[in-house]
View 1 (cartoon, rainbow, N blue to C red):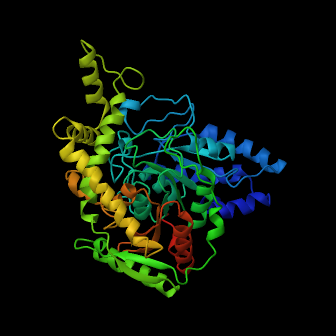
View 2: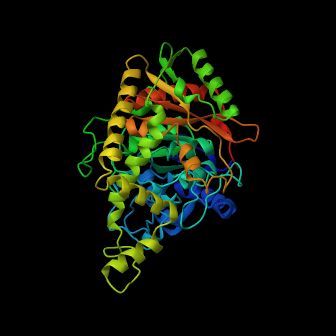
View 3: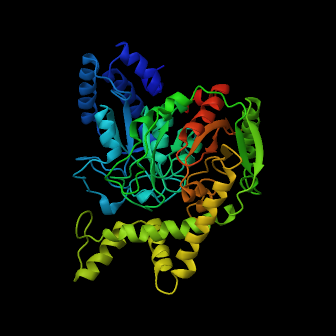
Length: 483
């Protein structure tokens, strides 16, 4: 087995014993990239020369005994997270040449641990999509089946992790963009509580929903990554000033007596039968481990998709107004300033981004604000209250991550509504701001992964990681590799 197939904690043990070096890991990863990247296309930018320079710095630190959890570990970063001096495009033509003059807080924290940056991964343009088909660069393919999508918008990060083209990756999640691709690609995806991880340096899509999180090969690695990136940041006004605990400490505790809520609204007509059966078996497994399963109701779930696509598009309309061809990025000239604006945006933005900007601009416009945006915010409050009420009687909530396994490339591109509905089980979590994790829980008859979503109380990542770890250790789905 190549070193690229190992986890962070497995490599950490070997590195600390000096049985291998960061350069050895990097060599195996680049062999994998050379073998499969042309088929998968998970990266937009590969920083090969920089990777080797960073690996050499990490090696010197290890020899000196200056070791952190991620020292020498090669990690891929989603291309909507700023990396100083490195192209950061958001998979959009409008930012095709944007090189940030500053580092995001998350990557700054990784740099302090002397991680190794492999490159920037592909995504749906400005993180708007569920399949990574909306990138202006190329479509990313699912390592389990090249005819299928990897999910989105963090499809490049999930595909690279599943294909062992990195050891772990960083993604962002606005409506399921970490968890849904993790489910489709058979890896672990964690969306922390809103405010747990700094958003400084994340190029904004919908500011009240966006959250950065890790995509990893197992739950232990997810805890390690969260330890490394979480924490208060004065540069982010939405960052929570809370003390961070060691998330690894909660993993070994059993789940006997823990109450697990199963919401009836998530096991609906239209869910893929194999997904339904696999998730049902996973819930039974949790019960066999000592958890108490309780049926609950989240009554406003039916409104979540509509509410999300009003709030998210409204915030996108506001956030993306800055891309006008004046300050940075693409500029397409015109006879006057207004024509330059119009030409730049017409050529710079893709169809899905234009669709969402127009929807958001409409819902924020005079005469429609109260009917749409204000009403959506009121219903969002009801959705949040549903979760608060549910957590009065249960410790975690368990659902399918997605109603289907990975679908075929091109299958839903002509029907935006069907594409939007692929996030139906993940959207509520972002609206409520609570943490959730997707872990592999089985495979369909076509050998496509299925994900189990575990949702927790605000700032209670420990419990969802604990449940996820207990389930993972009782099964061996996470050991299965795509390639």
